[in-house]
Length: 29
Figure (tube, one colour):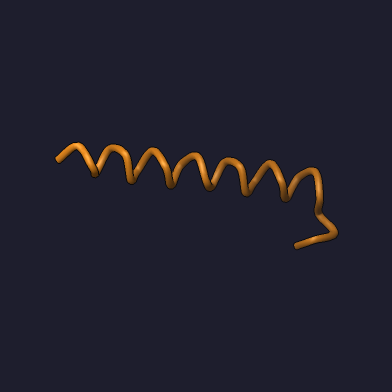
């Protein structure tokens, strides 16, 4: 069941990076 933790952690990191990029580069979204 370890892959569930990796999957949820990866999704959280991707969402966080997406929000940071959207904050710094709003003209691309």
